[in-house]
Image (cartoon, rainbow over all chains, first blue to last red):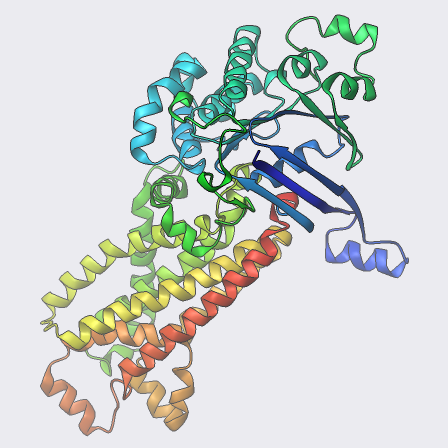
Length: 255
Length: 307
């Protein structure tokens, strides 16, 4: 089997800053206070994902899921260690793709597709499918700034799913969509799974992860707390308790 | 459709058939920008519409701005200071310099803000971030074209006779400004993410540009006052570019008899070895661009989290 994503001892350091202006910094220095504070958002994480695997990435808020995904996606570079990927990557980071709030949905669609690596012919061929999948109707002509988070996720997911990717990253896409759209997404992600492409799926919904993934990675404060069986991973995170199950009855009531 | 990619089921695929395993950021850098022409074209188009977003006159500001400056300088320098008496065809001299100064200032200013302004894309999408400064440079270049058309018309009306050296000088001048403008934009767009002070500093710097190039005063005056130190004046690539541009347009409108008269007065209209100076300046700017690119990739590491 060929490795699809290799994350090797990755560290990403973030700087929390207390003081920004010259005045603030001088005052803080004079009083002997720290002017900045650093912490590792990702702290020595290593794992390998084989091609065709569907992996659920779980963890509490602020545990570093999105940061890790950004490094796999290439938005961020690790400070230490290395991230290697094979083939084209598409997907969503933190529920929505990057959109320009002043541009219309159509313009953002085109721009996004181009950023994800489509060329003009490819986009022309797929444009109607993307629009149909997003199913935004007339809203597509309005500036994205007026979109709800659900509408943004629809557009972003719709573009990303139509790219010829080898690796698909889905970060809480199901969290904001309505039920029909969620079902469509689940359907599509199942297709990704069966087509032998790699899927990294971030979710807080135990149900969706169970349905979708054969392996779970759990992040805890930037460290890899668990790597293995889906059921065991969900248990590790204590996402399988009774009351949780009730909430989770549908296709994942996330957040 | 997603179905168009047919990747072998895992296990069956041989690693040799697959794309190589590599860092997802491997494709970034200045060269990658020109590999992704479709995206670049979209960004340039978007930038053109965004620069004058919400304004009624829109693109016309690109002409109003240099034209008002032109008339202001022409009135103060030419009319009040009577400088145009020593400089034949002073308006052409002034306008050819102004076009380049404007090109540089716009590239530098808008380029510096490019990353911050596109933060929505920068923090979530993986792409060579050099795209944004490059796009602003191309937009500024796009605005130069109609100004050059105006300049050509004015030059023709003033009895312009174009020549091959002038054409070379024209290309050199534009290349110098594009390269130095881009390297400034790259360097400061990244720095501006960390401290917005850099954007303000650019504003201050652009003031000096207007005085550091032979726009309000002719090169012959520099030569007259500085003597052999005039060579140091030409270390400034912006000054080289402006002189080159004036070589292309303004000199062609000055008649031979007038040139002979100025030469007889002991004035040096154009520096000796101008094209050599231009080529060296371009080389220097390319080195600067390489350095800026290196600094940019270093800073780029921290850009998404700082925005």
